Picture 1 (cartoon, helix red, strand yellow):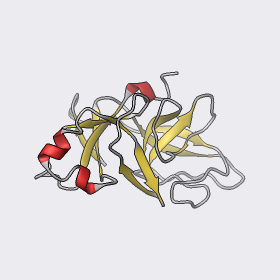
Picture 2: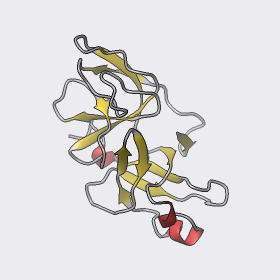
Picture 3: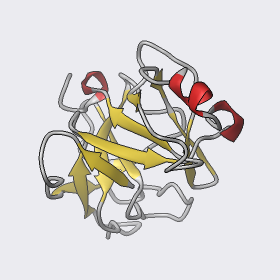
Picture 4: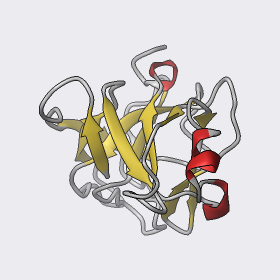
Length: 163
């Protein structure tokens, strides 16, 4: 979910991307990417897919976050509207392990880390391990105002256009 836009008064509009027939959405149902799901594009791939677990990375690159449900079928390519990942936009997500982020001191220790998004059974959460090829950057957040949430931005190193 969008949290804040640090560079302008509003978030940019969505762009349309191809979704190849037989793509699998994060929920496991064939042919669907759902609104709010992170979307990836592998280098050289024709279409986008729902983000794999432990992504984005410099291999599984981020496109953005789906603004619509994709419309491909098992045999026909489709499209999905995606809000592009930019370094200016900040997003909110639940943590995989709440205790890692449950106090302001614990949260502050995570700020600036380069982390990954987990996808377990179609539920996206954020992890806490730092890594040079990880594509989410933890941003500061007041945990009293936003308990159980993590603010992050997407790293330009893992943007699908940065190949």
